[in-house]
Structures are given as C-alpha cells and as structure tokens.
Length: 402
Image 1 (cartoon, rainbow, N blue to C red):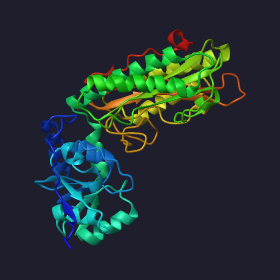
Image 2: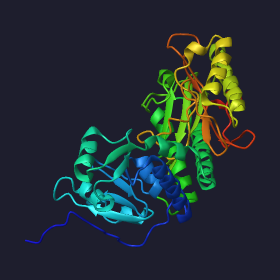
Image 3: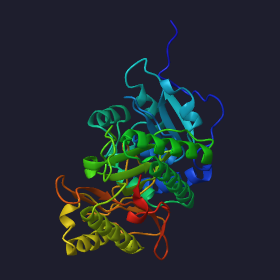
Image 4: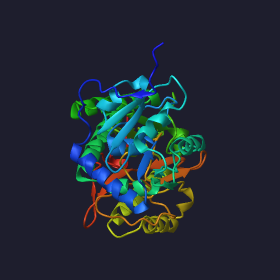
C-alpha cells in the first residue's frame, strides 16, 4: 500500500493578485522580525485569521481545522488544510505547505518542518487555545514561549499608505450601501429586505473596484424600533412602521479589511423627545471628531465626551466605548483592542492610525425617545488633526426617510 504523506506542497496554478504589492508584505515581515528580535524569538507561529492575513494576505476559512503562518528569520510559510487544495498558496505571499488529515496532528508536523525544535517560539496568547498550546509544546519542544500578540497588534495599529488607500475605498463602499438602504426604507418592508438591498449594492461595488479579489463576508445590520437598543443586534423580519427609530449599519469586507457606516434614521417622522436625544448624540459625535488628533490619548478623548454627556444628563445612557481602530478585523475575528476610545486605554493617537467616532445612547423601551442612537464616521489621524473619510450625511435633516 502506498504511504500517504503527512504534508506536501500543492502549488497549483499561478499566484493570484493579492490585496497589496509584495513590497508591502515584505515591509510588514521586516517589522515583525524586528519585534521578534526584540522579544528574543527565533520563530513566530501565528494561528489567528487577522495576523495570518496581515502578514501573508491569506484569509483562511477554518471549519474546525487549524491554520497557521510560520515566520523565521528567512522564511514565511502558510500552513493550510488539504480541503483547500492550491487556493491558500495562490492567495498568500511566500510559501505554503498543505497538511493532510490521514492522521491526527499533521498540522503541527507541518509547522515543525519549518520551525524546527527547541527554539524560542512566539505565539498569540489571545488566540491559541489551551489544547493547541499543549500540542505546540509537544511537537516544537520550545526552549521558551513568548506571547507576541500585543506586539503584532501595535504594529497593525499603524497603517501604511497602501492600507489607508484600501480603507478609504472601503469607506466609500460603505456609503454606497448606505444610500441603497436609504432608498429601500419604506413602511411595511422588513428589516431583512432593507439589509439585503444594502449588502447587494456593496458587493457589486466591491466587485467593480476590486475585480481580482475574493468576495465574502460583507454584511448589513439594519435594525428598527426596539431592535436598535444594541449596536450588534442581528437583522430580523420586523416590519417597519411610521415613526420607527432605525439604525443603519453597513459593513463591506475587502480582503479581510473591515469598514463601517452607522447612522440613526427615522421612518417618515421623528417625535420631539426622540429628536432631542438624536440631536444631542449628533453634537457629541461632532465634538468627539474634533478631539481626534495626534498626541491625545484614547482615555482623554473618552473622558471629554463623558463630560459632554454628563453636562446634558445623558451619560447614564452610554453603553460602550466611543470608537475603535480599523484594519484587518471582523465581527468574528480579530480587533486592535489597544486603539479603542475607552477609559482604560492609554494609547496616544499618532498620524497613520485610523479610528472611528461612534457615540451611542440607548433609551429604554417605554421611555420618551426610546431606542438606540448612534452615528459612526471613520477618521484617519493626520499630522495636525484628522481626515474624515466617511461621506454619507448624518443627522435629522437627511435621515428622516421613507
């Protein structure tokens, strides 16, 4: 009987066009290797979607299988499952090894074939499970293990010009979805119908702008009435009624890069109590955007917006932070938690960072002005302030619709 391999290289077809040029990935790997050297790591083993995508361009689909990227002083090798055949190699910068499932733990044997035994190994403490950490120790027999997730997060927080260009296009696509949603809002339609209109418009726009990309993961959360109380509430079949508070949330995904547009809307008309809350949140949004500039910390921005709301007796209706970083992230993988506008984040804003401003107030059901109010713009930190790359208008003048 022919012996079946533990791993092999299936370099099928030609390399595809990646989201960025080779020089971009090489610059990221150079920065990574500098951080590895500072930490004393000889090899880095990545297992998360966000870091593998950031350093190689390959965004995996796990379906319960482990995936990896092994980076040494000279090599960068993605490790993928046989079910994906040659696609991971075509869509990654660098080399690729396919592991087979003929026997358990061939993934770690493939990692070992690149890393070698007895090295100081960098890993992602915020992603590697206890089970897989044990396997890493069993197979690689590391001299030591160092959590390099925080260092890679800090690297990802600083965007290159190429990243900012992609994020800028993503923000424009989000606006396209917003206008499609605005056109779809009518009394008697369901949340899901409006959401699909926005999603379809964005997917078509992404395909037009990026003809060589893979298309997946773009989505919309469109909420109405009580469903607006949470920022991440999923779409339902609720039918829109006149006077409903609405929450528009478009999320185009381009090669793992997330952007967003979020707006408060009302169906047909807005009552006085709701208008008062809405206008206050818009004012906080504008004030918050004015604070985003180099040299200020995330905590400082947060405290100033808190004071703004407290002066208006509204702070008790705030439910989460005022903004976050953008880049390789998604609702089901990865985020740059070190760049969020919260009281416990001391990161200082610097040129080249990209961050949202998104204040939200939630008034409980049955109270005057009930519902969730949120505006969301994406801002690039510049040398002397910021650039708002979101174009869709906010506020009552444009967003009482249907």
